[in-house]
Structures are given as C-alpha cells and as structure tokens.
Image (cartoon, rainbow, N blue to C red; front, side, top):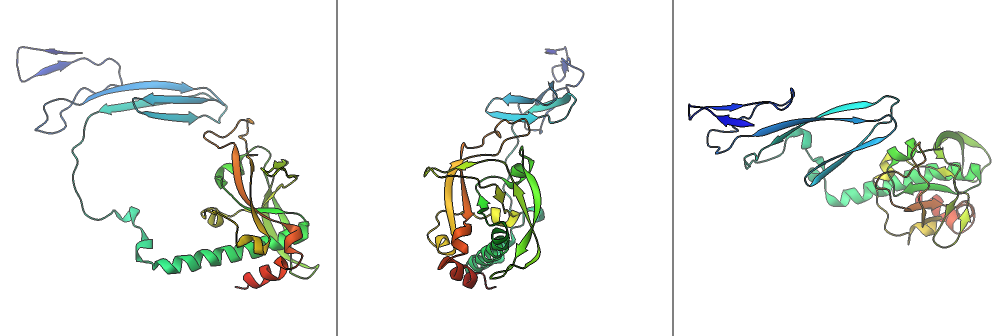
Length: 258
C-alpha cells in the first residue's frame, strides 16, 4: 500500500513481500507509477503447473525427480510504442534475397534425396516406412517406446546393401481412416523433410508414397498425450509393395536421379 506524506512531491510505499520492487515512474511524462509484484510457485516432480495472468496462460512441465521452484516477477505497465526501420541482424531473413522459383527446385531436390534414402531401407526391411508426419520431430524422439535404429541400405535392383539408414521405431499399430490395420512401426524422418507441408498425394502415389490419416500413436514418457496434440495424425507412407513393382518402381528410380 502507498500513503501520502506531508511533502506533496513524495510518496511512501511498503513492500508486501521481500521480492517486490517499489513503484517506479516509467518516464517523465507518466501520470501514474509502474507497479510490481512477485509470486513463487512450486511444480511437483513429474507433474505440471499452470500460470494464468489475465489473457495469458503458460504450462510448465517438471520432468525431474525434485520439486521445481519458480519465482514469477510481473510488471504492470504500458510501454511507449516507437516506430523503427529495418530488422535486427538476429531476425534477418535471407529468403528475401532468394528468387521464389528457386525455392521450388530446392524443395524438390530435398524430396528426391529423402525418397532415395528411404527406399533403400524400405527394400531391405521389406516393409512400409513412414517418411513424413504432421507432428513435431523433437516430441517424437522423446515419446514413449520410440527407439533409434540403424538398418542396412539396400541398393536398387540388388540384394547388396551399402551403408546404413537411421530411423525410428515404435511398437504401435496404426489404424487409418480407411479401415486398414497394419503394423507400420518404422519412421524414416528428417528435420529438413519435416519442414515441408504435404497437402495431397496426387503425384506422390506415382512413386509409391501415400498420405494416410489415423490415430496419433505418440505419447509422453508417462504415457499421456502430448499437450495440444491432435488425436488424428497425417503421415506420408512409402509402401514396399509399390516401390518394388511396376510402374512405381521405375518412376521412383527416374525421379530419384539427382
């Protein structure tokens, strides 16, 4: 609380907690003071805590074995808005210097390379491989039951293999919206490929790759769904039976020539 004293140009304030700064004046023209308050919350081990302040909500997860103490310091003020020109160097967008048409060829080159690599693992495993999914790769890697594997990369038209292919495996069964029930537990994903958004598979089908919708199999380590995760999941599947038979086999080989 603040009480006026005899001097009209002086204000006296008392702290409600040891962490609270006293009120300050943001600028010489301000007609009011900036008020502050501090609050401490504790997030229990292996649990989550929610912080709600007016129109904003934040969820904090504690994956550790000990309680997590957090001190929240909030300043109630209205900063002055100033106009400026240009961007900071850390926010520099190099794509502004790139011709738009060249971006399309770059994406195409990325897809070619990814399909070429995934096809070698698909042939050796003799099973379908998920090569893209509409879900964050960082969360997939942290999900329950997900493991990283190295599998041989089989050369096209040969039983020989050259090098290895890194993929993720899950013990889940993916049920698609079309009623298909199939064990698709090999995920050939890459950070670069995950930045692409696939809207349809009209041309991808010609090289043996199909978009499918089904249940999201990825859970946190505590076997609970990821916060905000959709129940349904879209993914792009490279089908083994397609890429090893005509005409998709020949079309994939021709498309993957880099």
